[in-house]
Image (tube, rainbow, N blue to C red; front, side):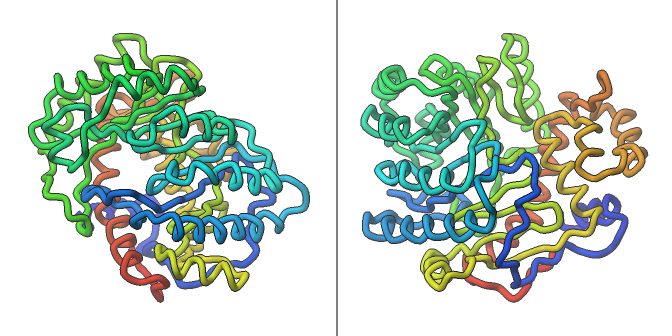
Length: 417
């Protein structure tokens, strides 16, 4: 697994040099000139810890959550004050954890961000199904949230039991969503669970759209080594058949595909915190991406608060990109949307895409992974599956290793991937 990703990395970056993350950081972040800049805020608290979830999270208590948010707001001001005036950004997303547990303080966080940034494309926030009630939704909407994403995982009893999730009161959820409308209501599902069939997954997504969603995400189950989930991975052939069948079903119904595994029933409904050329992350485990570097904050809540209290950033690790490394990162996450515009690549890097990766594009077309339409490269069903398949390798070879170490060490000396 690591051998495949290493070979791919060396080929695409044209060097044997690995991705090296070091225990260093710049106190002044280079975001002033960034275009298409997004914002992300991580709130790690959960009422219950799901055994399949790899993200940075801790058990909720009102006291610890308030303490954390006090430091989070301080971090926002430390970073935001580095730019004179208010920097225009595309969007803001809250992830976790369960950000809605801090619903009463979300406005305070957004107000702090608005002191330094102008958010032009809306604000998204993730919720657990237990949080979907009129009181919480109104608090979020009054705070300025325009998009919500509900972590359903599955409406089916057998899969909720596998994942250790409780029953969902779908009627109460539907009524709350009807009473407090949002621009985008997304619902997340996990696919490629053991024994999961096309009918199971289709039923889940159909129920989402009939329960108030106008956008769904079907994320593949990935068996991280540091989680305690007993769930095994679905074989490759079955996974591809399931992914292709569900994609074709929703395309045939006229739904639009916004990324590898997201579909919407309305043209303007969208929810994605990943496809940004540059972004700033606030909070423990939050990452920031700039033209020449990527940094990630410590996963440890206490260490995060101590750093911020001292007036320093909570950065744990930083990678300084070579130009080719940055190109690979840009292409990987841009392709998540299932299309790549060579004009965007040339604007960002100052060189033609075909000049840097002409052979790879030719090979991808010959293999049936992509097609070219009006100068835009678009993934085929086959290409989308193999993107997902490689992303699974990438996650287990790189992200699994990094997050596994950072869960144990607040500030590792170095990680080489």
